[in-house]
Length: 234
Ligand code: DX5
Ligand code: ZN
Image (cartoon, rainbow, N blue to C red; front, top):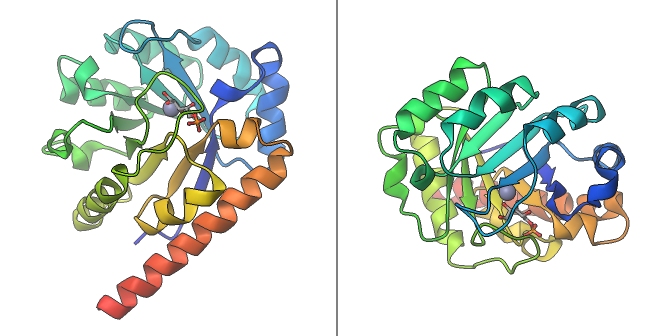
């Protein structure tokens, strides 16, 4: 069972003309990580930002930068993002010819490695690599855009990954990305997520501090419920 909760605002919904200020503002408002979405108009139908922008934001980010690569191919971008100050780099298995090699490449730069699974991507992609990972990123929307609705079918998948992580005995973070809001954060955390990405719910919700606090409050209730359920089952 996870005992930590992290909220990772996604800059995808920030004001791109003021990214440094937006980064500092969400950190002041309680962000535990900065989620940095990289899209290539190839693996996903959208185009965002690369290592130069990550590097420019690094001095504004007093918390880890959580880079989510939605690009194909992956490997050539690992060193530039590591040098740009990424703390975590996640990629999609469909986008890499050699998933184990990509994980080792990320780790060789001293960066935490994450594998990102789309809503329809089966969990067997975690076979043989889970113990190498620092993070599993479960997508609860199809990647490419902010502001989409949470796909409820992902909830049992969160439960299943939580069981696999617990069985591994390793401290692997379980991050959920897409459509996370205060009104579903409780169920997402109760299913076993410990790291919640929220883009539109933070940046389009008015006061960042209030929005982050609402999501955190609900997610902590979900974690507490999960703890109670575990004690009853034991
Ligand atoms: C989608 C991105 C998400 C997105 C989340 O492809 O990976 O990180 O920004 O945005 P919301 O929270 O608005 O769904
Ligand atoms: Zn993302």
